[in-house]
Length: 140
Image 1 (cartoon, rainbow, N blue to C red):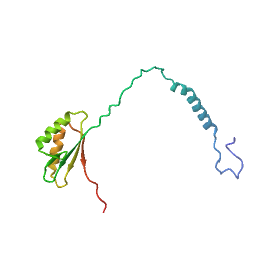
Image 2: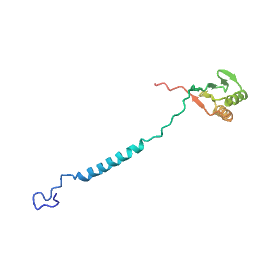
Image 3: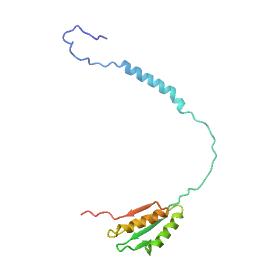
Image 4: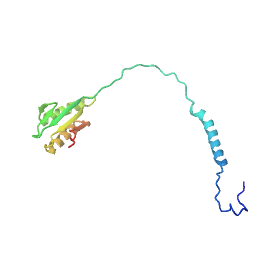
């Protein structure tokens, strides 16, 4: 392989061939490394594990529909309740396992303090799964 040329025509032309020998050498070294290390990765300890059968314990949490209308009235699953009664019910629901999900529906005209009081009562009872329910916008 010549690096210099005494030919005046081709002296300024770029070299158009790539030396593939170093690339092939690197590829072969990597292939040998993978061939050597592959059996090491597939070794496993042979164990005879005990057999057991069980039922899936799939407890789905219940949900509580809690609503606040524009006048500030509180509804527990459609039943009108006072704030103190709602706090008691939140406390009893907070003790259950799994804890129920609280679906909070609030009228758009209701004062925010009613929503904040409800969230505070649920938080004091240890309920963490509170979701706000809304209706999607209708395209116009």
